Image 1 (cartoon, rainbow, N blue to C red):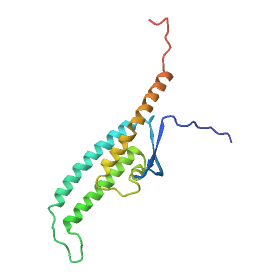
Image 2 (cartoon, rainbow, N blue to C red):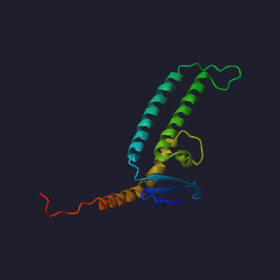
Image 3 (cartoon, rainbow, N blue to C red):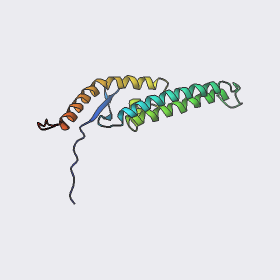
Image 4 (cartoon, rainbow, N blue to C red):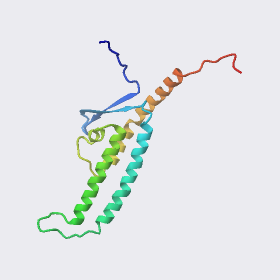
Length: 159
């Protein structure tokens, strides 16, 4: 059988993940800067976050109307249980939206394996801000490569 040797993907940028003490986790995320859908994925993630926040507020407002009475063997009241469930659904939706942008499992890697938590979205935004300078340099290089590849030679006999 004959084989085709694939090229290394030029626009792929890999970012290692470190623990708070500076040691490497062995995990990383990859961002494909040549992915035409990347800006759309980033926008969709932000839109989904806003939608999720709106839904969470409405669900908590509705849950706050429930009873504070606890059943005989329950630790939580109906109201407390409904609020916790609203948060659980919110963070599951947030993790899914972030993974659609960053790649499957990337959110959990950035959380250090933790389950979603209250300030997770803010932490992930902080992590992404750390890599923006590296992305900008690669973006300029990619733009230069595209211009060189598709440049038009000047023709003298053009009307």
